Length: 472
Image (cartoon, rainbow, N blue to C red):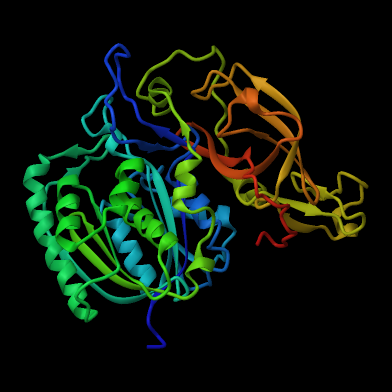
């Protein structure tokens, strides 16, 4: 059918860190062959991870479509967190930004993408109490999808709602509470099998080429994979990332699309608070539809993280920092006036001399001609490579790290940035190193999250960014 909905583009984001050892007592032998969890950096949250996934694919989201942020760990409660991502991406103001909450929000967001009414990011930061039995079985990740037909076409969908006390968290609480998985597994398996079979029947299929199962209950996921004939490739990804909450069905689907061949069929089943099943046929343009690195490539590039450092990052270990005052909170009026710089990393190009001024100003920093005479235009630096020209190591940072690197870098194509380095040891940052911008949280003061762009090491195949105007 020419109007069949589906997925036009997709991307996954895995943080640069992985935790595979949560021993509080290092004299206890490590558990061999245990799971590994994906860990967001101390300066990451669901908004920054959503931006990292969406920035590869969401630039052309048309007005009238919704931008959805599905999560159980939004950085704000009453404020729409998706609005921050919308601003950082420089989307058309006619794109409505909305948050979806709850453990089932990931499948719901995918459903709206597949119906062609939304672009969605699925992102979660999962925490447990230190030493919890499932601490290494939880993880952090994001995935993003744009509706269309290039990557996959929706053949059928089905849903099933079950009110079950599986995972929950009261307002103000930090960690999920979990009921005994032996009780909830039976309920979720029954819901999952019923939903999957109805979706397959609607698609007129007895079998599919790939089965992808996401569930908040590991027992249920294992049983459903076995019953539906899954090969376990999704379980292999899950063992390397942990269950990534709302992001999990999107992450596993992205991994499946990375390796699927055009014409193959995929059954995606999410068994959480009921079940949602989607039957997809992989499109001819699936290879061109992926934005950013493949899931397995990101897994291979991660750094191993120590448990003590992880606890500091999450605020689960109260450590005395340097005796210096907290960073000031940003104010609403200047944040709004300078949104182009703060959220979209836009500089201004002088039409008189062609140089780029950062932060943007009414007067060119190079030739001194005022903007009214030089007709300066906006230039986005988000996708460009910057080369380090100087490095300073701050040992008195209020961030949960003993030191951080602050760099000055020249941007390919014009402009200069002064920014924190991230996802790299401060001692490894050297003059000449190529780096790329990444949207991060600087600090939180007076309940206001201060977001801006940092610089992280550029991938080996990074190329200089192209000039882009008007923040697009």
